[in-house]
Length: 128
Image (tube, rainbow, N blue to C red):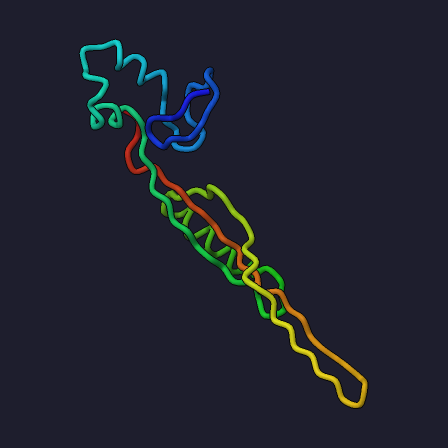
């Protein structure tokens, strides 16, 4: 196993491109064997793409359903300016529980508050 010098991700010895930050080990090897000083961080990073990330949180509707309309609008909006969806997950923020009892008869409500978290990425500098 080896670590990516760009992001520190642990990857297999035969990996050519880091799956986390897209660092290209082959270009690094070529550079290491060339006249460019391999310890020069700026030169090393210049051979690999750089990305920026944006996090968007979409709360569920009050009914607990995913707000698919807002999700669709957000995806289309970001795609139109060259962002791509990198990851998505649901964040359970908490539970809201209320109950009451009157004369031995009880009732209550329980709701889970969730958010859909979208992580977008786009390349801000292409390879070499």
